Image 1 (cartoon, rainbow, N blue to C red):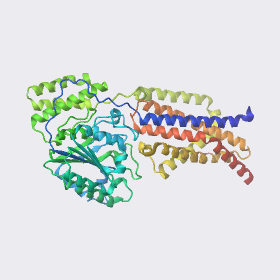
Image 2 (spheres, rainbow, N blue to C red):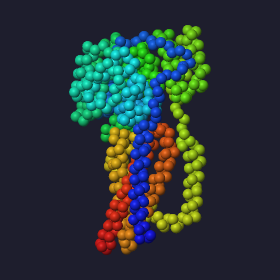
Image 3 (spheres, one colour):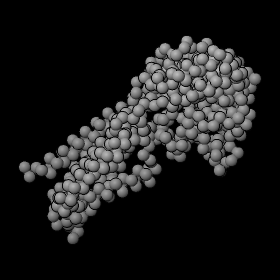
Length: 543
């Protein structure tokens, strides 16, 4: 049996590595389809829904500056960038919009048009499908989408859109839009400007081109009849990645201008607040799954109409939260108070009561599972550490002598992999490091793990001089085993935190990256072991 011990050990690690790769593929599937979308059929509300109000604008034009984060407007090297956008902000309302996470193209597109975050829409990756959902592109009486072919292919266009205008290139989108807007009278127009996602421009030249496109569009709008909403789906990190929670990615500019808009700061709002805001401008019901709060402060309503739209929003939120199984009992008194005040003609009291109830509803989130509780990490985990310390105190010296080289190799592996991942590749433990191509990026992570393991076995190969290659292989087996055990403990810890989907996307990214590392270490164990054994032989001959 001893004759085949090393071979069996290496085969075991290969099998373990394959198992980790399978687990990573399962985790990817779990992540990209983390929640089932809520069916867009509204449940009963506390009172019959109020009819839609009068539109504040004859036409609403939504311009999405794809890939333009709010930080782009504060570039010290170009303080006068986005002159058109700054002018519109000075004449209208402006603020910051926090995008949903995952902050990818399809999740943010879905949030902008439905007001639903990924946990409700079920769209958490580029493999999602919004074609069956309720959105502004279904609600408006006529709707037009304009963008480059490349931009529109990457997004799901809901059925029922009156018209789709595809420009031949990102450069020509504004020209196509301005020509179309002069003659088209669609109630809702959505324009995707994706020049910031193309590589032919960079820096101040890029922002000048994007701003020039915005100017070309706004020149054909009538602020007496048209409302303009300018925002972005998400920003980009310096290496072009996105999808995570970094402020450079999630914080996007927001400007509202034209008919029905009250000038002034809008503050920081959520991306899901924009769809119900556009619905009010158009005088239509918000999408059924909208979980956002309309930006009442920047919309021009008379007191009675302000109370009415607050109450309609509250009823819609109440119906949605009942579908989610949340919030019904907690806010029932405030909802009844809002309806009673409206019936009595007390508009101010209606708004106050509706806001009080609505804030509780829109702020409600699913409770964390036990895996994220203070009892586990405040009591259970410390007890586990104490138990480990007790075992080491009893068998410490023998254990330390047996795994001393493996511990050294583990430290070298961590240092080498961190150097490759964080410094050379410029990545972070964030969904942005994986989102654009999860499978391909994880293969890279596994390959980097093989390189780091090759560095970690160098001291083992040197220490085995005089003992022979077989001794080296045993030490490599121990190192791989220690890495697998430590990694498995981390996997368990992370799974306890993220077992409820989308609680923390950073933890999901960490889990996927860790599983890819463990797979790479296990699958490459025989090859790296052979490499280390060859090094030992070279070192011995060198002596």
